[in-house]
Length: 551
Ligand code: NAD
Image 1: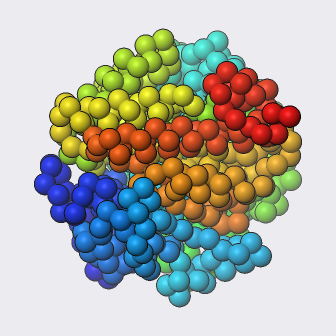
Image 2: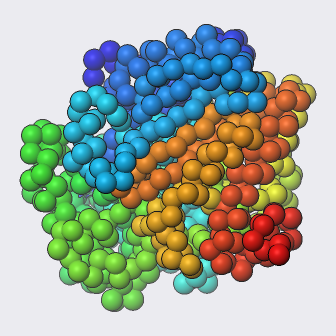
């Protein structure tokens, strides 16, 4: 793309903007494009198919220039990756407000989105790409770890030792799967059409090895399964061919899922097309490519359903592959569940979700200090303690050092206060930014993922993410975003994000206390409203006010 160049966030304590509240979004925008983080930095693509941090390089330059000059009572407005205005607000207001990829509902489909994107009028923001809180594959590892831990608890006596998981897609998000499986002591066989994607995860220690061919991949995985040894093996191939082949051979697979970029049919390679021809074919004949991709996804999902018929634990991992397979003509596509209703919803009822933070100094020691603070705050949370120990040992930082762990209502604000104190005392050398994925308890409407099969049928009600963005704006977050389509594709989700800066000041302490209470509070009230007893208990015990329950 015109203007492309390598980008890396500044490190250290010297400001290039006027205050830490504007330095923070500046560094995090750049950090999203750090080649260690971004899948295709030259095209401004961070992850998830075409999820971008900025619309084009001219927009990127304008955002950087604007953030460097922005005052502590001004707000930059970003419309799908392009800065469109600077307005006088006040010091409690966000410094950046972002709206990405939103379309009026009747127009919200891929062909229309692409037409507008082609005209330079919009961009795909995914979830944390266009809202500048992507922290590399490590960001998703915790959620994936939690999901596989829940699978282990539900079906395999609390551990994946001695089980074999089959999955596809080893990209920005999907690359977390092999590590999440091995952190849960299981064996993972992961299929990707692109050898480089697999090799990259070996280099980052998320994947143990890439097999020479399918036969040796199967043999290595089965040996590890027999030894009850945690191990992960990558196989180069197309899921639409390899999954049915594994089924045909009767390979004893216990768990099946997938994280190819199925949400965008142009980012899923149909069988019979080479990786080298992919971009050209998709660009020249998008409709024909889409038909072929959906036909391949139908075969891929058919194999998944048949693995389930044979007794395997099978789930959709949030990429909309069931709906694409249905469009490709496969009628049983929705016979296996999405991962949220299957495993994650009880966590959402408690306001739990993917809390994450990054050290603006660039110094790993700052993250180690925050790790200790979190472990000291929650000594009785075994899953969290195990995760934090494993993360420190096995997870290589990408870009600015960062950490993630799932915390709930009444926990996130405590962590925020502790981090702010560490910055104030100088134990941490520069401010910490605290944000989360948009895949959170009360920030997303997504009927094929986070809000699939809600108890009251409210799957497609999209008022909640809008209220979430509004309340975070009203509570003092540093930047707030509203996106459409992330994770599952255009027309299928609306979601919101927030990031807040802990710069050690009293003002930051007050803002953090409100944001980190109200943001997960949205998860609790959303699930109370939908009728979940667990959420009602949490609201009652922890004092979350729900007017309709007060009469
Ligand atoms: P990505 O584009 O970085 O990676 C996708 C990978 O799939 C690539 O490596 C690609 O080579 C491979 N691939 C494409 N077609 C294939 C085929 N037919 N067979 C085998 N491999 C194929 O995307 P990502 O960031 O890893 O995200 C993957 C999917 O997961 C997306 O749909 C995304 O929206 C979704 N997602 C899920 C969650 C979650 O929490 N469950 C979170 C974020 C994203």
